[in-house]
Amino acid sequence: MTFSLLGRCARTGQIGAAGATSDIGVGARIQHIAGGVGAVLTQHRTDPRLGPRGIGLLRSGCPAAETVAALVASTPHEAWRQLAALDAKGRTAHHHGAWVKAERADAHGKDCIVIRNILASADVPAAMVRAFEADPDAPLGDRLLAALAAGEKAGGEHGPVISAVLELHGDHDFALVDLRVDRAADPISELAGLWRDYAPKIDEFILRATDPDRARGGASGSVATGAPA
Image 1: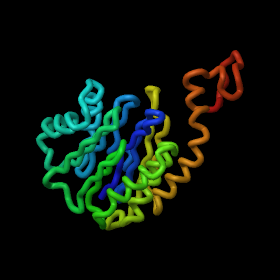
Image 2: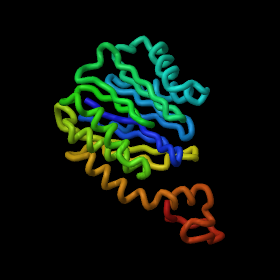
Image 3: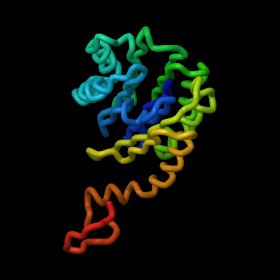
C-alpha cells in the first residue's frame, strides 16, 4: 500500500526520500537518512529497526547492494520485508520479500530508486523515475515531489492515499527538511504546499542553528522568551 523513493542531488550532495501510503503516518516509519552517507527505505510489513541498521552499514563503507544483502541476512522475517538503499555515490539496491503483496515492483534511475507494493498499476515506478530525472538541476525537494505526484497520476494505490512524507539531509547532523502529512484526503498536494512554504526558509533555519548571530534579528546579548524557533 506504499510507493516511495530515495533520491540524491549530484550537484549539492543532498539525499532525500519521499513516500505516500493508504495508512496513517507514513513518515514515522519508512525513511532513514544520513547526510553524506545514504538512505534506506523499509516498508510493507515495516520493521523500522532495519533503517538505523542500514545506515550503520552505509556509514561503515558498505555500498547499497552490500547493505541490502546484509539487512536481508540479518532478519528472520525477510519474506515480509521490502527494502531499498541509496549510498553516497548514488548506487542503489532493493529487496522484495516473497510475501510482499502485488503489485510489487521497483525502478532504478540515475541517483534514485523507487519501490512500491499493493498498487493499482505496474507503471508507477517507471513514471516516478522519469519525473525525478526530468530536471536534474531543480532542487531535490522539487524532484522528489514531482516523482511522488507522477506515481499517483500513473495509478497510485488500489485505495485512497492518506499520508505522505518528504525528508532531505545535507551537510549537517540534522534534517534540512522533515515534512509530513499524517492523515488527509489529498496528502501529496498538501505536502507540496508545505514544501512551497518551507523551502524559502531552509537557509535561515540552518543559520539559526550554525551561526545564530547572523540570523535575522541579530545578536541581542540576552535570553528572550518566545523567540522564533
